[in-house]
Length: 174
Ligand SMILES: [Cu+2]
Image (cartoon, rainbow, N blue to C red; front, top):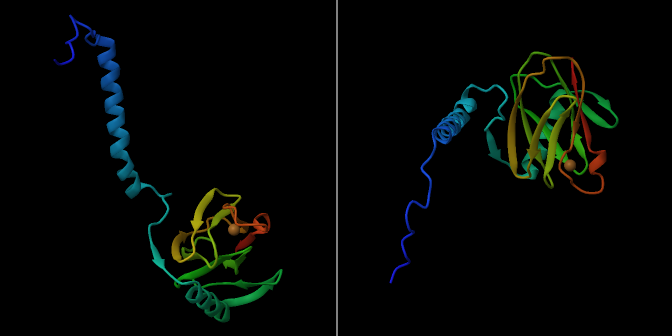
């Protein structure tokens, strides 16, 4: 025989207050749910979704070609590169450095190609709040438009070994 049916009215029908709260919660949930894809299209702070596969050797070659063409100086042993805003810009993460130092012009939009040649690093620009992952084998494109001039530090925010805390790069905005 099946389990006995519960006797009588074992549950209470929803009261008016409960119904109102239930409907409010449902409506808010639907608004949030629908707003997520809308924000993807109208939000101006979304991470870009452009990425490519790239080998460490190919990315190193792109970094070297960029250095040959656009190096304007040297800072702490790193080449200072002033790239052309109309061309792709390459920034390499490796244990435990960011290469090169980039010199960018204020209010110009750059397509920065980020990749790592060893393991996962994190790209974080200080003092502004920007955090992205840098993954070996992936060329991740960041559309970057500096809106104020000055020196910005690139910190690695993914633990990447003994020298992680020393992994600081630099962007000079002129
Ligand atoms: Cu790192």
